[in-house]
View (cartoon, rainbow, N blue to C red):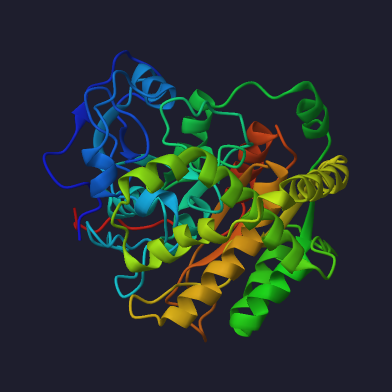
Length: 408
C-alpha cells in the first residue's frame, strides 16, 4: 500500500541552496503545502476545506535549506491513532516488517522513509505519532520540545501537546534536519547541556514493556545499560494510570476546542476505531478541566526537577515491538493505552524525545526479526544537545542501518 495520499504526487522544488541540498522529503497530510488542500486523512475534512495559501513554516524552512518536497503522506484520521491504519485510504506498508502495522498517526511519513521513497519526512507527534512509527519501522525519529517548531499551517489536534517531528534512516540526516528546524538552545537548556549527560533507565517504563514482552524487555534493559544507563529511577511513582488519565483528559478538552465545532456541524464519517475515540467527547467532564490542568502542571514541575542536572531518561519507545495487521481489537486497545502511558512522560513534560533504532540481530543464538527501539528523553529545550548525544551513541553502538527495498 502506498505511503502517499491518492492522486498525483505533490512535488515542490527547493527554493534555495543550503545544508539539505539533494535531500527529498515528504510531508504528513496534516501540514500545509501551498496550493494543496490538507486532507487530515479524512475525505469529509478534505471536502470541507480550501487549499492552503502558503507553505507551513516547517515546510518552507526545509525548501529554503535545499531539500525538495516529494509527496504528501497518509495520516491516521485527524491524528487520532497510534496504529497506522486508515479506513478510507488504506494502511501504508511497513517495509521491513510487512506483516505488521507501520504505527501512526504519521504512518505514511514513516513508510516513505523506511522504503527509501524519500530521505526524510515530516510528521506530527501529540501522544507518540512520530515516536511509535519510528520504532515500528526501524527508523530514527524525533519529537522536539513543545513549542520549538512553529505549528502554523499544521492541522491542530491538541495544541498544548502537538509538535512537528521528523523521521530519517540515519542519525546524521536526523540531526541535519534538526539543525534547520530547531531554534538555538535556551539559556537554561544550554546550561544543562554543558554538563555531561547522565543516562538513567526508567524502570517502571521497562516494567510496562515486560508485562507484554518480558524477553524483549530484558534485551532492551541490557541495551540501555550498554549505552551508559547504569542508574535507574521510577518516573510514574506507582501511578501510571494517573499520567494516562491526565493526558487523555487534557487532550480531549483540547480536541473539543479545536475540532468539536466541525465534528458537530459536518457529522463526518470516521472509520470505526477512530469514531469510537472521537465519541469520547460526548462524555467529556468539563467541570474537571482545572483539576487536570493542575495535575499536568505538577507533573511537569516534577519532570523539570528530575532533568535539571543533565539527566537523560532512557526507556522503551513502545510497549510492544510490533503490532500485527491482524491484531484483535482488544490487543489494539491494550497497545494504545500502554503506548500513550509511555509517551505521556515527554508529552506532558513538553520534552524532546529521540527514538533509537537498534540493530535487529543482537546475538548469534537468538536472531531478532523485529525492531528493538529505545528512546532518550531530555530536558525541555535541550533538543540540540539530545541530537548530539544521539550522534555520539550512534558512533559507538550497533544501531540499525535500514535497507531501502524498492516498494515505492
